[in-house]
Amino acid sequence: MSKATCGTKQISGDLAWWQLSLIGIGCTIGIGFFLGSSLGIKHAGASIILSFLIGATGTYIVYSRLAKMTIQDPQEGSFCYYAGKAFGKWAEFSCGWNYWCSNILIMGSQLTALGLLSQFWFPDVPLWVFSAGYALLSLFVVMLGTKGFDKMEDLFAIIKVAAILMFIVIALGIFFGWIKGDVGGGSSPGNFPNTMKEWLPMGLKGLWSSLIYAFYAYGGIEVIGLMAMQLKKKEDTLKAGTIMMFLLMVLYVGSLSLAVSLAAFDKFTEKESPFVTAQTNYDLAFFPHVFNGAIIIAGFSTMTAALFGVTTLLVTLAKDGDAPKLFQKKLNFKELPLPSLLLGMGGLTASVICAFLLPGKVFEYITTAAGLLLLYNWLFILLSSFKLVEKGRIVSVLGLFLLLLAISGTIVEKTIRNGFFISILFVALIAIVALIMHRKWKNGGGKKLKYS
Image 1 (cartoon, rainbow, N blue to C red):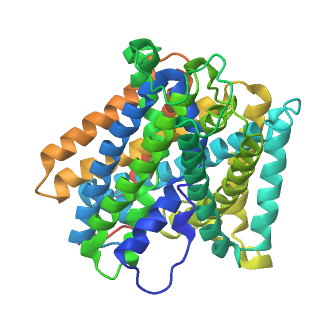
Image 2: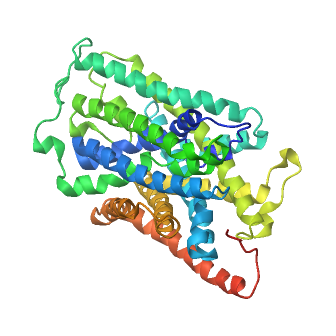
Image 3: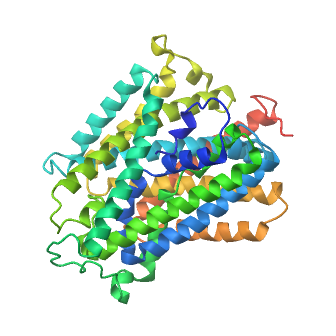
């Protein structure tokens, strides 16, 4: 699910730790894995498996530090509250807006991905046409209201997990020779990559630059931090995250290991899910269409729910005094916060324009920038933990190292460097506004947070 999606879902009653684990899996698996992993394979080849193991380690460290702060001081504002408690109002403000911007880019990444997946059936239709169509359809669904939509999220989460499991079962059938096919130009079925060229086709730099896509696929742990307030026992926060991360790692690494063993490195492309590419040469005409359709349905649902999410998030920022009060105003029809919704739609419109101007690179650039903004928030989590949690600082240092490794990987690879510059532009704009707001806070203006 998208990273904004699950934060909008209102859950009544107390949650058991295993329920939070399952919700976390549904929130995390999304387009970033189903299509974004193809970007990672393009750079890292079979070593994408190592990237996802590193990503799992770094993500778990971030979640464990967030869980420690949640257990110690449960707060609705979660990671943004802790940033403010550790460093002051500017950090809480920057964290909130960085989170909003990251979700806008995540929506743009999903929108572009939906267009690319649709071109599987209609390759001659321009990408921007699909992007515009999905954006308008998403707005239409939002305008209808949220009633009944949240109930569908559970179904779409099941579809995504089922799609991965279906691929694993079919791939194992190929791997053991139960399903025959012509593997022209690719690795033989069951022939796991065993040469350095297959493992590191682009060298260590390729592995380095692929880390951002592995971390992006695990994005969502910050949402689970927010939802930890719904647990019956706050001390179960760490247990829920541990089980969640273990299951995600098994699903991700297992499916990717099979994918890279069934197709050659040069067959993978960012325009097609690696799990479709892996089975191109086999007599499974139905599978690519079923898989593609399932991911489009689930992807559209999460993008639409993300639009709900960023709309609600901006209203919250406005209520906290971190955004103009204009964004609290609601439309009489369906009680929608129209100004906030329109700003979210502005982000989708920008993605459509980018798809028109840069159809060949827009997914790579937006996905890279979205992943980076996500990691910047994770940096806030780790840095906050240094001040707020006494134990485990060595683990936090390791987490910082892994995050900085993934961030720097986007700088050394020129094909994705523009994504890094896009993320820096967002950070610079937030910093400028934070500096302006700092004067207001210093003079006693705005709503101040009270940290216990």
